[in-house]
Image (cartoon, rainbow, N blue to C red; front, side, top):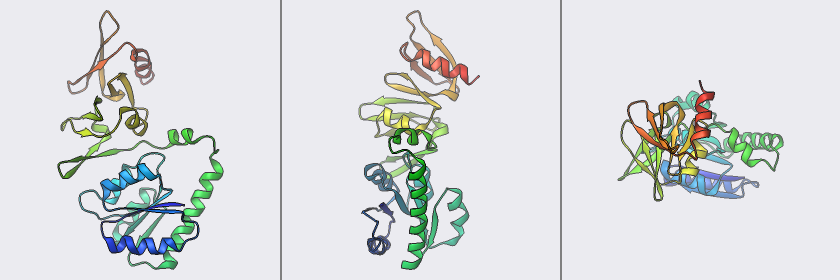
Length: 247
């Protein structure tokens, strides 16, 4: 089992690493010091489970959980406060570790993780990881680092997405933040409401108010709120078919 520890306090990370190292089936342990680093490490090392602190500066554990890439790892929330328990299980947590915990309590959480992983592996064909990823729910928000801070962008606020070198521009009513991400990689996380409309852009289907097409088959998409997104003839048939299916 590959495990990611996310906690802004070094002693808490060290304690959890020591206890996890005693578990025979834990093959790899990685760490993150904050929410932004947690998402980076989750994408890089693809953990089976995350032990996730709830209260962290800037980006808390619930925001991390809502922004994890798909397929998402299993989550065990770790906190010193018991008032978050209901919200934690609403976020589909496997367990809720209340600090201070001991080896015996951690082992109960590990047993729940093992049972869930065994169930998922038994019900998922080994040759179908892509199908499993498609079945995972899309992310509900994105975390965008900005000048020493982190902006939380709700996916429902994004009208369209535009490529810009190694970044994408998220067009929202509150601005146009830059996210270091490929368009193809981002679309995998956002779900079926987003579709390419151009080689350098994708649109949220529910944001489209009208389609304007010129004599060559290219055109523009008029979006709710007045924004416009480019439309190329290459992507027009699929987009029109999706819009017709939503009618």
